Image 1 (cartoon, rainbow, N blue to C red):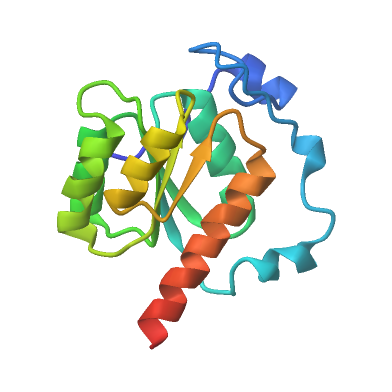
Image 2: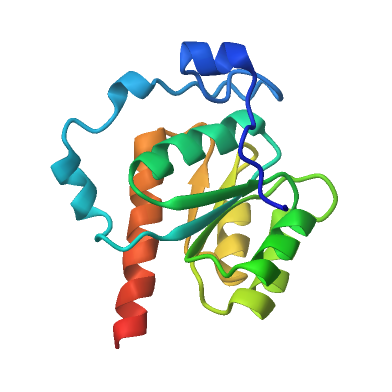
Length: 174
């Protein structure tokens, strides 16, 4: 199976921190800041479960997205490279993709075009710890739905995924 289900060490799981290990990007999320009520969930997606693919080589980022989006009712697949992401989309077309720019092997900007060949206009959200305006513009030119620089608030990132899913649904219904 291309998708991974357990991508963090026990200490991160016990402490509820995401992004505090691996590359030392300084990303730390607290799950105490979860949504206050379940009614806010419907603001970002309807009752249809969506399939979201996360492509990032930082296990803690994948784990954080998986925990947060699964709690919102989404099916989440995580992979650590663009090549694995391409394999995953050939098996199951996602409703949205979250893609890191800096990956081992093929970089995220190159992967956008290859993903587009397979998944068409499915929204791709680009994330990176090495962001600048030039990278953001290039990602959007390549077809990214939006750009999210690290460090980021996981709640804000989940809202962005929700907006991407809603935009894709609206596009399909037209």
